[in-house]
Length: 235
Image: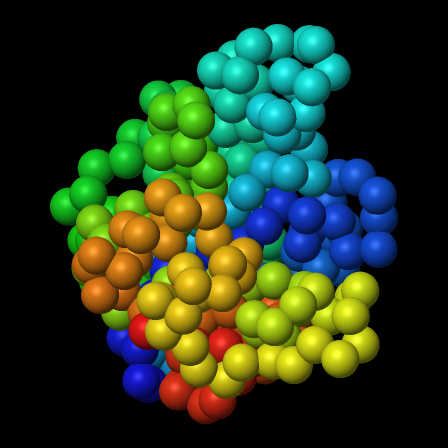
């Protein structure tokens, strides 16, 4: 395995599959099987998952429902729902897990404690981080970068529905080409949308590489962890 300890970032929208809202059980099952394959191969896996398939803080603000801070807290709770769903799917395929939350809710998950999280990983458990950073105004991308640095992960793997970083939006521009490898500086200069700036800068300052890849393509997760050229490497 090229990467012994990885932080996998999944978007909430990825869980929707072909649906317009909520969680697609088939996608959840596929992710669980792919993650099990990587764990069985000997890698330590931590996961941060978004909540956009259920609720986004920005949506609440734009709709006049709540203020930004309240909306972000609602979004954090949505990530815990997704994390619990993923935990259930993983345990159905016999993967040991621990769900750690940045917001205390002892009945359903452990509070995030850095050393405890690292100990779980060392014991071969998949650690799922819920509730983002626990603070409003920060995205789950930032939570992923922060947790990856804290647990001393070797890489941040951003699993999306696109097979890497392109010169333009491949769904809108048929001439867009995919980067196999790109530097942090080039991403800044070209204005490419990889992660939000806080998350991206955190990775750059800590010399933590990012790989953007298509998580919906079976076996891609294993290939990335083994060091095969899948997706786009930012380093």
